[in-house]
Image (tube, rainbow, N blue to C red; front, top):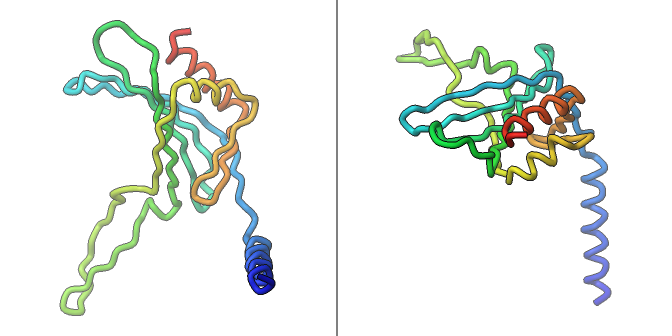
Length: 167
């Protein structure tokens, strides 16, 4: 039993050493919020989105946090029951992705475009979105970066929640 206790202490010390060497987390404060609405006549729905932006053009990457609700296009307007939260990393080098093709050892010039970005989606109950919109401080940790919602972003998110929930 003494050997087991010693082995556990060694593992604990090694884990503590790894944590101590980890780089400090980046924190980016949000600086912008926009809204959009998209109608899908085939699916008979409207998707409303509030997009919060984090970072600037000098950053190696910027991030967006989208809050999106879907509603029926026709019929009585009913409050949203769930909200999608989409966090996306947009790297600065995404504007001109690099690709080099060679054919028979000769370069083949190509024009590239980005097909997709690094993105995560979670669906939360509308009540949790309302809690986020009414909070004094909100942060999100995704892709090893902490996104701190700005005061203006939270205030406008609160107004968005009031509109989405018919208040």
